[in-house]
Length: 322
Image (cartoon, rainbow, N blue to C red; front, side, top):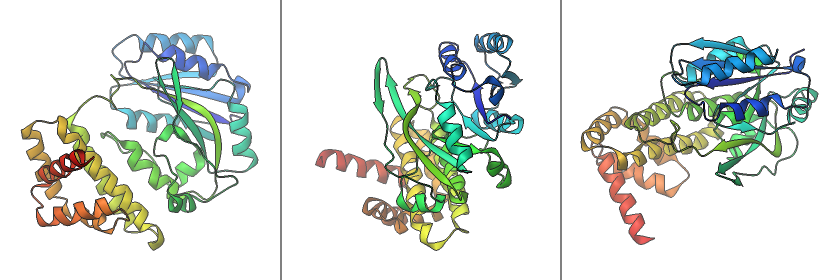
């Protein structure tokens, strides 16, 4: 039986891919008990050659290639090919803890979990810094966790039962940045059995050239798209959790506007128009439990065509006061 599938999208990461794959290989369960699915997303460097080298050497590694379509499509492709009872989405410039899969699969299978949340660390050069800790013990529903506000949206920080994802038709929205911010809240809302492993099993390389850390005006627009998707989803959720989704949507609006400091005047004008076309999202700021978001929502309602300028003025005032 294949207990877990490690799904690794690959695009221009030849500097880091060997490290990632070596940690996936150096595990404490049989290669018959897990598989490594590599999705070559039209990489232009030497990543494919490295992936094929590992495929030839290890029976539980399979490489599939597609034209470049982005991280979401690559993850969805991996999910469609996976045979494991559980799936773990791993970014190819990061890596996992060696000899961690036995504990992870035992916890998942023995407790019939829908998902297991694990702890991660940031890595800058030789410095390793824990990102967060989980103090929760036992098994919870996703709704309980959302109400506590302890969810981490990064997809690699949660290992999911494959049948759970398929049953609820959960996949990553294609063509956007910040796809995890759109995917994870929806996934958690549907979880019946979630547990936590407060052990660092995932290492995030702070790579300044990665797509998540390089300036791109599209990120600002995609954050609004994420906010819109979560807003649509929140229309059909339990009333007790709507404030939590208001906070998540407000965070995505703020993440969008934060990007404007690195955008051109023309791009900022386009974003103003885009947000104005979705000005109904301001209601989530007003309904948020956070005073800062409420204040933003009120001012945005008064000046709906000047959201970028208003946000930047608020940020500058906050910076001066601090």
